[in-house]
Amino acid sequence: MQKVLIHPLYVRIFHWINAAAIVTMIMSGWQIYNASPLFESLIFPDSVTLGDWLGGGIQWHLAAMWVFVVNLLIYLVLGIATGHFREKFFPLGPKALFHDIWAAMRFKLGHNSHDYNAVQKAFYIGIILVMLMTFVSGLVVWKSVQFQALSWIVGNYATARYVHFAGMTLICAFIIVHVALVAIVPSTLIPMITGKAKPFPEKENSHVA
Image (cartoon, rainbow, N blue to C red; front, side, top):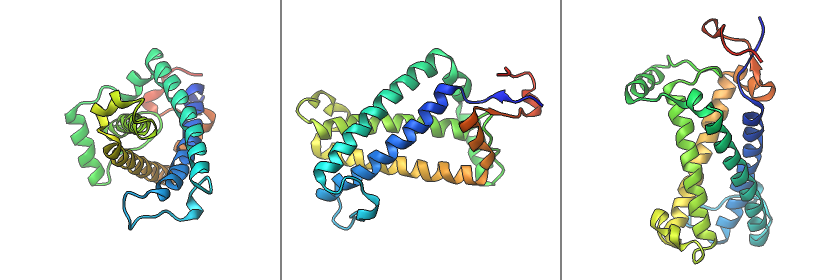
């Protein structure tokens, strides 16, 4: 049976560059956080931080941030222009979402790399929005005077730090769930490397790469 294209090349490139950039931002962000923690009881171990000191953490964080931003913008433009978003993430209605959430609660929700269920669609759309909000709050934290026009979205410098921290926490949670799902269904990893997978019976008429 001939394999079909599941993930176009640009999607795979975005995925792996994004993964590297986000991990770098998280680890360097923890280094920056430790210099002025929001919560006194929460300090990240040196073994999971990047940069060795505040200045080093900032350098790593900003470098990875620009890689992430450029990569995300290209992905968003191509995703809209090629119809990838429309095909993968829509339609998404409340009825389908509640149905699939109920199925997930009973451990009866299907998971594959060919078609996203409603929970997956909401999951991926949600994390893209979280990434954008985390980026905006990061700009306010980084340059609170220059980007004060964005303060109506995330609040002042102090509030933006909490928004940024919350965004980081949600992204970490997404990574944990994402990796766990790959561990449960390892066959979903191969298409993100090669781009192709064997079609399901209902996908026999899919475009063959």
